[in-house]
Every structure is written in structure tokens, then in C-alpha cells.
Image (cartoon, rainbow, N blue to C red; front, side):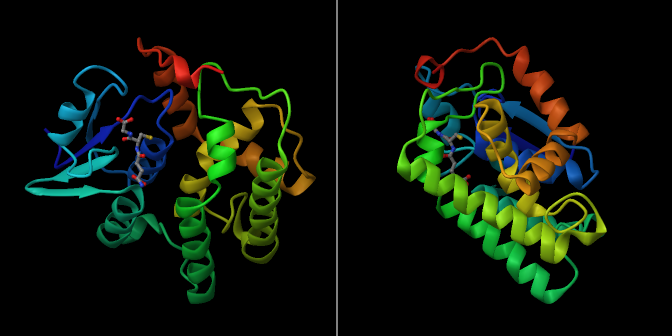
Length: 217
Ligand SMILES: N[C@@H](CCC(=O)N[C@@H](CS)C(=O)NCC(=O)O)C(=O)O
């Protein structure tokens, strides 16, 4: 049994779980994981056994339970400094935290209109003005981070950092929906899609037995 156990929602649908899982993978330590199927009779009771908020992901470390994807990421960044989960430079780190916080708190229109679905990506017939505004803001963040901080690699702050995990589900949403992206955003999206850990998650999502009709658009 590993020291860390990550409780997740369905890999096919749970974007917050994907974020925490990508950060955990980046730490390079063994961890156990358990998917609690969402939207089933008994789901809430099952989640509450592992997460006091009734939401996933949650990370168990011995007696400690950490819920909320950003808190999990922060905990792992403190524990596994070699994984360099935040940029080393203070200004870059502040920007990385701002991007991550903006993702965590925002982009509701996009997230609502285009649910994450690894197996069958949602393909909206049209993009409303509020969704377009979310996309424009998100791709502007990507372009700005790449231009200012991205020189050392293909990701937002060069090598993989927490904001890349925060935006990974959005990359799946936007590319899966076939939404045209500005060149810099497309290049960044391709770099995220090339992450081996993301491919591993998608492979696992593809064989999950559960289907949630409201996320099958
Ligand atoms: N703010 C939370 C959001 C977590 C969240 O909304 N998780 C969803 C799955 S993606 C959930 O657990 N939903 C409970 C349910 O559908 O019963 C975080 O960042 O971890």
C-alpha cells in the first residue's frame, strides 16, 4: 500500500480529478487511486467517506485528508520540491499562481457549455458570446505565459508546472470540441496533449464502464 491515496471522480468526466492526478503523477512517487463513480445512487455517501466537502478529488496521506484540487497541488508542491511544481522565479511563480487561481475560480461559461468527456468530446454547434469570452481570455493567458515565461520548454512556464495541470482539461475541452485556436494557443495545446500522463489518463477513461447522460452532449 502506498503512502498516498488519491480519490477521483470518473476519469472520463472529472476535470478536477484530472488536475490533481496530473500533479500527483509529476511527483514521481507511487500512489494508490480509487475512482468513485459520480451521479449514481450512493455516490454522495461514497464520496463523503473520503472527502468532507462531498466532492472529488481528495488525497489521503495517512490520517490526513486534503480536498480541493488546488490544496492538493499546493501540498504536493511543498512535499516534493524536486518536482518543481511551481516555477523557481518569484515573479513567474506569482503569475503561475494567478493563472491557477483564475482557472479554479473562473471560466464557468466554457466549463458549463463544454463538459469534459474524454471518450466522446462535446462538440457544441455554436459558441455563445460568454463562452467565446472565456476562450479568448484563456488563450490570452496561454499566449502571455508562453511568451514571457515559456522559454525553457513547451509548457506555460517552460517545464511542467501546476498551471499546466489546471488547464489540461480545458485543452481537452477546446481541442475535442474542434474550436479553432490562435496559433500560440494551438501549439501549447499540442504540447499538453503530448504529455504521456495525459495519454495514460485518457486510456483509462476510455475503458471506464460508467456513462453520465448529462455529460454526453
Ligand atoms: N473546487 C473543487 C471542485 C471539485 C468538484 O466539483 N468535483 C466534482 C467532480 S469533477 C464532484 O466531486 N462532484 C460531486 C458529484 O458530482 O457528486 C476542486 O477544485 O477540487
